[in-house]
Amino acid sequence: MALTIGTPAPDFTLPSQLGHEVTLSSLRGKNVVLAFFPLAWTPI
Image 1 (cartoon, rainbow, N blue to C red):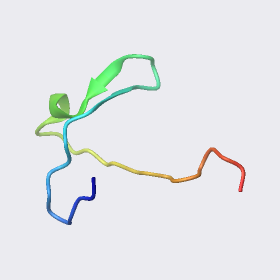
Image 2 (tube, rainbow, N blue to C red):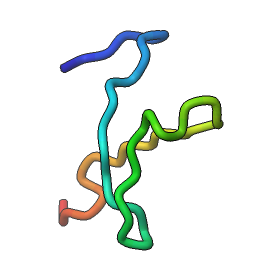
Image 3 (cartoon, rainbow, N blue to C red):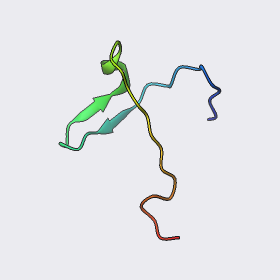
Image 4 (cartoon, helix red, strand yellow):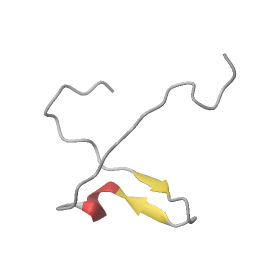
């Protein structure tokens, strides 16, 4: 699913570095930075 600039990110849940689940919507009203690193953990 492609997003365009200005489109709100869809809600999702991911594990934190501490092993807890974090849902994007639970951070509403806070500053959130989403960073994607394609192929960052794979050999090239």
